[in-house]
Length: 552
Image 1: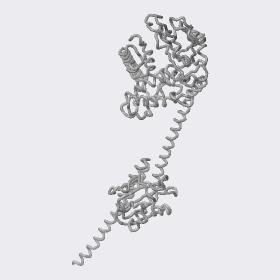
Image 2: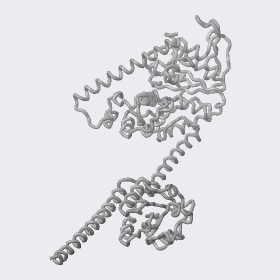
Image 3: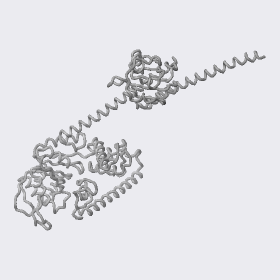
Image 4: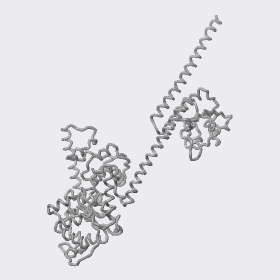
């Protein structure tokens, strides 16, 4: 009976052992198959080289039951191999990422033969000359060359603390996996190279744009459009002479910057550039501001004053908004320009001046001449070299450059870490017609920077009021075009928001003028209190019909 039982139990034990062995083999194959799938997923999901290789090294170490896995790439500068990725949970810190390792005899053999090389502790002379394997207590190493298109792009190293052998199945599996790892490395390196080339091209483009502007003295003029380049070429042409330049264009197009560029490129650049905004001065004071006055010339003239024309002697006089000069003063200005002489208000003494004139206006002077609102002889004297400055809607390709410039400017002023402008927002800004041109864009970006709370610019596009032209209705400001009723309500709401915003702006300006006793410029002036440029404040005061003298 016992022999019979023994004969029955012996086969059962063998079957159990065989079954367990089969299950273990199936589990091992399943893990390795999953690893290959993970490799494919990693390769396609990320182009960050170190991130991909770290994940690959960790997966291989677990599946192969190793103690450490490294991926090393050749370093062209040193002629060594750099450890790019490492998974070594129990390591002593001797082998680490970014470590430069002299290629050992075993590594050279793997590269020469393009085949795996296995080295055990008894063959340590074949391992790293620096002795890193000894220091970490490595007992066995399997080196797999990472090959793509018959070229070694790196070395995959699997390390064990014991001399547990690497089976042929282990080596075969690692060889098959190495092909995908090599592809991942090549893809990431190619992506890095493309990114670096893209950045280089972008920097070269910026450099060439800056070089173009700096060569012609236009560092402060932002843009690279054909329309702007044409204007700058005209500036370059007229700057070398003393001819009067007349800058024509809508409000906010940057006429003052162009005037300064003419002065800076002229032979008068070492002398004074004097500006007079004819629209920002009350009519009764224009003559005094332009020509000066003597003490007692009129009520309140308690001292003598030098006029802008005299201040600009040997330099450049910029008459902004020249179309707003009162009709009765125009003959005196014409004489001063033609004869190069004038008298101060309340004086009979004739003074000589040598002034180069640059004038600017957003008005139609020809129409004003026809309507007897502007003297024809003065118009012909001003219109020697007209330069028409294009509105922003005719140079839309410059809008992104201007937006980025203003964002950086106001972010620095407010110390906000704004890093970028969202693509959708930039499209919306580019689509808008900007009836106020660069000045409107600058003020809008200033407000947007103040409202931004994160690292991406946040702009209230809804406050931009639509114009009557179909082109100026930026469809990309919203995902979908609203229905007719919704558009009507939307326009009403936007108009209401804009009106409220303008009212607040006006109130702020009035409060600042009251506090500064009518002074616009200077350290204690209204412009400084509001944190804006003096010219910007004067423009807004004109828009709202505010006069500084009312609050003096």
